Image (cartoon, rainbow, N blue to C red; front, side):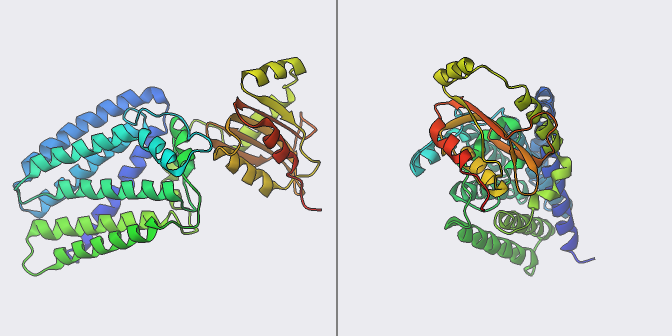
Length: 376
């Protein structure tokens, strides 16, 4: 077998399975998070010990062990972030009308502790491998850290595919810091630098006289960088890259159809007297809107995206049932997420939208829903 095939296959297997495991753990009930972090911390302690042991060994086997250990240490960082244990002081969605600088400051505040922890992880691996022949664990960690930071910056600046459905519910507010754009100026630099870095690592693995640890180590690092570049391309190409790991997710939230049935039930039972709605308006805003007889589903979808982006202010939730040219659709916006599904109404026979929140522009939002009519 080609001497570079085994490192490549090992990299792909560890990259896919470790990402899937993290998604699986952070999609469980939040009561399981403490146990997950305790187990992950014990695994990291073992990984750091193995890094110290193998750092002085210049063999292919030690390179594989160090590579796996680097992934474990970085995996702990991601699990700590996505379970909410190490994030940042800001746990709120981006304030409506924020400038680009303010949005950046708020976004940094949502993950600054994670970035500090990532830096400390790099320092620990540097100390364990300093002046040693096997530094594969350190460079594995650094590549994952830098490419993850690059992906986050691209999501902030704007890409077509945000992948917000993969965020756990308690981090759904992070989607408010992302922007949906065809492209941003950083993306070409990210993929170009990543591709060049991957090529240089493969060249180092193939150079004449390379030691066993260098052949295996640089081949795995080059493969890892190449996979990170592929993940960047998933942000812009019309391909659902998250499908690679969706089977690992076990979200406790309803599916679109189950959500639609629940929302219709809530709308049918929402017979609050007008004075109660008036009190809710005083507390921060609530209203009912009766959309046109026939709406355009695409207009509804765009309107939900605008609500998520904070265009109308802080909207906590929206429940709606409207009729389109093709069918009735039931939709919900809650915790920064939107869900929409076709549903033949059984309890609520008239189009209705109810929105609640604090400080949102009721008049503009109501007018927006009333303007969702399908073209004649």
